[in-house]
Length: 633
Image (tube, rainbow, N blue to C red; front, side):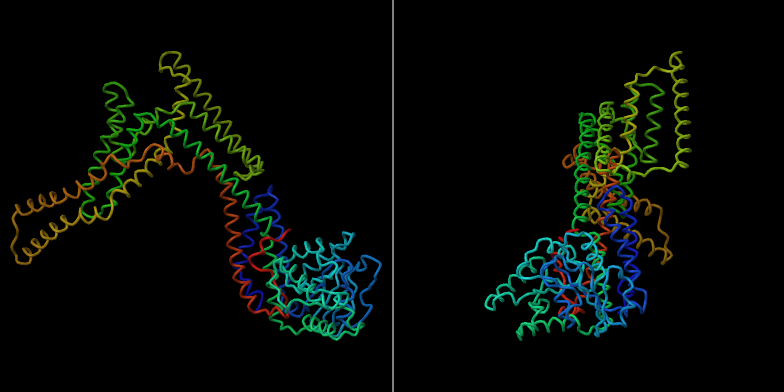
């Protein structure tokens, strides 16, 4: 089993796409933190899939703990060489540099370690490098930085505590920081300082604190020992120390070691979007969703207010009903689709004519011709003069929508996400765009001056500023209202025309058509040509057979009940243009979270496979899955 095979190209591609997506949110700290962590994990991946050199690298085990817990004593006792790592009962911290014990043949494979921070010594057990790291609760910050670099590259971490410091908060926080990313052994040192009757209770308390950190630790991964067991002559404590030594220096197959390192990469990647990073992105998505929903509601209320006049409501219902007739042929199918389609075309033209007459005023030859044009256009293209029912819109509604647009933009600015909406154009691209804008403004100004001159001379009718604003407003709403009407009509057709209409409406025409066809074919085969009366009668009977189905559809679509009310109609406006910038950013965050979830699910499956292959008694315990998302940064 190789890292290349486990860490498939598909997952690598997902990581690169996730990094690219996160980089778009350049003003969002959580997204940038995720991108940096993922890039670092990919660099580690590149180092660890380099071939045979990686397989030859020894298992790196780091002793992690606070000051005064006996890490250095334990390091010396495990190697059987007192004095390798300095020990002091008075100087704290005593371990200022990392001490590493490694077989001479393995030292060449530890090039990733900073030799300036290490004190190396030889030991005879090849395949394992044991490191005594500086104390994590040292007053010197450089010690913590050195320890973290070592833990990041470690294969297994050994948390060392003592009876008097088993509740050390800073040390436990450091363990929690790395908990989900590493495999762990847990050691309670200095057991010789506890009276023998109390040892079990103290050990149980230490183990309970470890389990509270989220680890499912049994006796195979927990050791209560004394680093000075040889000096005390306590055989029981000496046996405990031997059991720990056997676990740390156990033989491990290269394939299993490689599996541990692959698991470590998986954990680093999952850490990139875990804890506060994930929660911050989810919080941001929730904020954007709430603001978008609120502003969309305000847009719908503006529409509802403008469509609440009795005349507008009556016309909306008629238009929806006629649009449902146009959608009905596809619902009924078969022979019945023909008369339903013809009725929709003819009635739709009549409705268009009435709407056009409403908007054109009194009778005149010009108005009649204009109304006829609208009717013909509606018949052939299915386009209604929707602007007729937009008379209820005014400049006040336009101002309300402009305010909503500003509120959406202000929300993005407050969250520092306004640059995500379309990005910032480059200077080379901005110059042509600016030139086009200036040319358009100049053209509009020239046209405006020309129209004003013509009106002043009486060649064109004068129009008030309010009328011009109304016209712009109606043009603004028309396209979206047409879409909303089509959606509502489609819903009405699907609710009222169903399989019953298809079967009942087409059964009788099918029988008539089948009977006529049989008669016709039989006559041809017999050489007996049927008279013209037969064909005329067959056509007439066939048309009559369509009437019951047509009446059934007409009755269903003509019912007055269940027609969408204006408030239901405006609910069809799911994506108002006023909130489009906010929606694009929210969708971007949603896409980022979706990629995170997909990658996390893929890594979780791979990690479960690795967990089954690795024995915790030789490779250490792992954090419980249910608690892994609670780790701190």
